[in-house]
Every structure is written in C-alpha cells, then in structure tokens.
Amino acid sequence: MVDFCGIELRHPVINGSGTFDAIAARRAFGDELLDEFPFSAFVSKTITPEPRAGNPPPRLWETPSGLINSIGLPNKGLDGFLADDLPQLAELPVPLIVSVMGTSHDEFSRLVDGVGGRDEVAAIELNVSCPNVKSGLIVGESPEEAKSLLGAIKPLTDRPLIVKLTPNVADPVPVAEAAAEGGADAVSLINTLRAVAFDPDKADRWLGGGSGGLSGPAVRAVALAQVHSVASSVSVPVVAMGGISTGRDAAEMLGAGAALVAVGTESFRDPAAGARIADELDAELARISG
Amino acid sequence: MRAPRLGERVIAPLGRRRCEVTRNLASGGYRIFSAVDPTGPEPAAGQFYMLATDSGWGGDGGRPYLARAFSVADAERQEGGVRLDFLVQAVGPGTSRLAALEPGEELWVHGPLGRPFAPPREVAEEAAGAILVGGGIGVAPLAIWRRQLLAAGIPARVLLGFRDRVNSGGLDLFDCSEIRLASEDGHTGHHGFVTDLLAVLLEGDDAASAAVYACGPPAMLEAVRGMCAERGVACELAMEAPMACGFGACFGCAIPHVDGGYVRLCVDGPVLRGDEIETALVPGSGH
Image: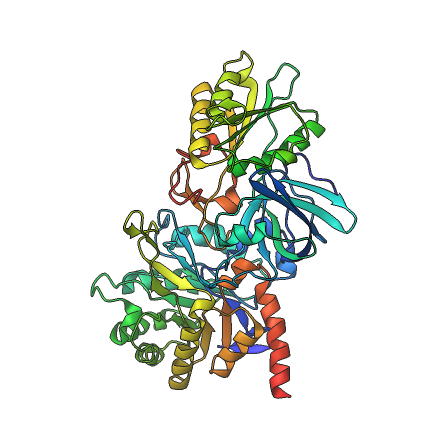
C-alpha cells in the first residue's frame, strides 16, 4: 500500500487526467474494467464550470514515439459532471481524483466547492494551463498567480489539492514552490509539451485547434529532468508523468523523487497498461532493493 | 455464455492480446492477413480492432507508435481461438508494417471495439433487404456483414467500387459472383462510381424498404448519405477518423453530431446512421 496525502492506494500507478475515460471504457470492456481496474486511483478528465464541445477535428497527429493532441477539454460542465458522471465514477473500485479548470478565482472556487463537498471525491487536481482572464497570465506559468489561486481556494475544501504543472516554462521549480507555499498538498507533472503538426500542402497547421500538446515516450527525458528538479525543491509529494510505458520508466521517476507515477499515452496502446506497469514496477523495485 | 444477436455490440476483454499471424495473402492491390485471437470473442460486423505488430513497430524512425484501427473483414471460431481477417493497403508506416507481416509473427490486438452494423428493420419477403456499398479498402467490413446477413436469412446485394487496378482488391473476402463492381478507370465492371450502381437500385419500387450499409472514402460515404437522405432510405455508414486508443480514452476521433457537439467514433461509432451526421466529410477523416 502507498499513502498519498492520507489516501491509501494499492500501488503507485494512477492515470494522467484526460487519458482514460472510465465510463467509456466500461462500455467497451464491461464490468471486467471494475474487476481488473488498471490504476490505484482514477483521475477524471478536466471539468470546467460550463460544458465544452472541444476542438474541431482533426485532433491527433502521431510523431516519432509520441502523439500531439488538440482535444480542447470537452466535458459536460460542473452540473453535468455531478449529475451524470460522478455516480458512475463512484462505482470504480479505487479513490477518485477530480481534475478541474477555471479561468478565474471565482470559477475555480465554484468548481472546488462543487466537487470538494462530495464524499465520492478523494482529492482535487487543479489544471492551471489556462489564462486567468483578469491578468491574462497562465496560472501555471506564474508563481504569483499560482500562489494567489491556492490562497483563494485552499480554505474552501478539506480535500487534498494537487497542482498540475506545465512543462512549457524555463523552469518549473518556482511555480511548484509557490503552489506548495500557497497550500498545495501535492504537485503533478508534466502536462504536455506545446507542439504543432504542419500540413505543407496547405502551408498551415494541421490540427483543427491549431497547436496541441506532445506526449508519449518522446517527452520522457524532459519529464524526468523536470520531476527531478521539482522533487528536489519541494517537500510535498510529486506525481510524475510523461511517456511512462514500462515498470523501468516508472522506477526511474520514483528514483528521481516522485511519490506516484501516472500513465497516459501508453494506455492508448494497451488499455491494461497501468496494471502491467504496476506489476513491472514491483519487480523492478524488488530487484533494486536486492 | 449466450450467443450475441445479429448486430449486437460485443464487449472486448480489457487487455491487449498477443495473436499469432497465420497467413498474409495478396488480394488485388491489397493484402488479407489473418491472426488467431486466443481469448477474445467473435466480433460483430462493423466492429474494429486496434492492431500493432510485436516486432518492428516504431523501429523505423519512431513510427508507427500508436496501434492502428482496422475493421474486421471476417472472423471464425477455430481451434486455438478466433481467426480474425483484416484487409490492408500499404500507405503509411503502420499499414506498411502490417502488410509485411509473415505467418508465425505476433500481432497485438485489442477489441472488438465500437458499435456494429444494425440489421435492417424490415426483413419481410417483399422488403428490398440490405444493400452493401463498399469503396476501396472500405470493402472489408462488408464481407463479414454480408456473411452474417445471409446466415440470418436476410438478402444482401453487394456493390463495390475501386479507383483503379492498383487501388483495388479484397474480392477474395466475398465468396460469390453476385457482386456488382465499378471502377473509376473502367478496368473492371461499370466505368464510373459505385454510387452510380446504388442510384439504379434506389430507383426500384421497393427501395424505401431497403437498408443501405456503406464503408469507403469520405466522398463516397457523403454521396451515399445524401442519396439515401433524399430518398428516405435508411443507411448506416462505417466511418474513419484519426484514432489513438479505440475505447473512448483519447477523444481524438471526434465527429460533429447532427444535434450539435461531437461524438467519439470509437465508442459511439464507427457505424453511424446517416441521419446522425450533417456530413461524412470530416476534416482529417480518411487521412
């Protein structure tokens, strides 16, 4: 068992937000999904205050050992999530972490208030990759914005707050430190790296949303560097993600100071990847401890 | 376990499986390869699998990286599991690797996934039955659908169209001579589009009771959708979109829905009714 912010987890492998839809997966795989759930906690897709349709297609582009996505956070909005999705996610055999994103302190407050009071929710992840409409600054790129956001929402909930850090900064450490000072209980990284796919025939970007985010093994070395820097600088637990495909990859992240690892793009290639990586990690840790 | 009804969605095992490739044959300009799924169920027609080879996947410059979605062309339970047949044309790094599979090699699969074809609502003797319209590599799911329809006693007429000799094949999947063919270059069958053949059938008195099933390039699907909508004929389209996962995780395969917003082709499709979409011409589809 692993203790993460007071939550007991069966093993240290969870999913990255937006990379596994447990409700859709149950349609595809039936109740075997509940019996063999691949992750020790489930992180929801990001919820916004109002419903979003997401970006126009095309939304995906394969790169060498990676994937660019431009999905645009489609979701049912807070009310739709609470009414339709939360009861279904509560049937999962693992703790639920809900990811939320707002464009102001007010929006974040509404989201944290809405999900934080529900018994089904074990923790909240803050997606801070969006600009604050008041300052125009992306919260996850600005230590001041991050600290001020945490100050505003920390008092609203007793649930652990995890701040999802962006890798699209010169150095993720100042934002991680500011989030921890503001009251974050944990940080998670990395989000995707900003990327584009180009269509030379049209001399234009190929994805419907313009730019997107790169994930997969292509970003793993970058993720490892940032996880190592952040874990060396903050005392809160770090959830590491970015191209983890094997138990060996996960062991490297734990060795770099992470408390948990999250699997994302690898689940696309194998829906049971989380469970496989947890097993491989077990063997890897047994080997290391000799 | 109860055998699924015709057109009922079959649930997939959770994990991917390693399957042994048993054959890889040329079929016109395409290839038909088969692999035996040791533990999976028999799929429904219109469902698909995510495929990746065990070796040489990503070996050349890091691509292919993701698994590739393929409609199943036929399937049969046999000793050791379920034989799955797929039709492939080598066009990119994924399809080129799959087209080069050799017997004895191993293939990773997860599936069967997605919403299958639904049987015609009207199967009375005087009803026109099913009309299957395939274009290019899209003929694949119509082979298993035709076999399942005929086994259920539902008449099915098959119309297949190809661009030219190189971009044609898969006829070996159909075990009859009652297929009407069209080719854009005139090398076989009607010189023109497969939709020309469909137009003739839809002029019959019984056309309103027909059910059209189509799979092919976006322009063909859009023509079929428009013709059926105009004549009030039920139609189902097996569509394609860039897809990373196949089970609703990545949200990549979004198709605009007629009610607004998007549906995910992998869990809400790949088979959609013509009246569920405004157009089959979706940016990125068929790419």
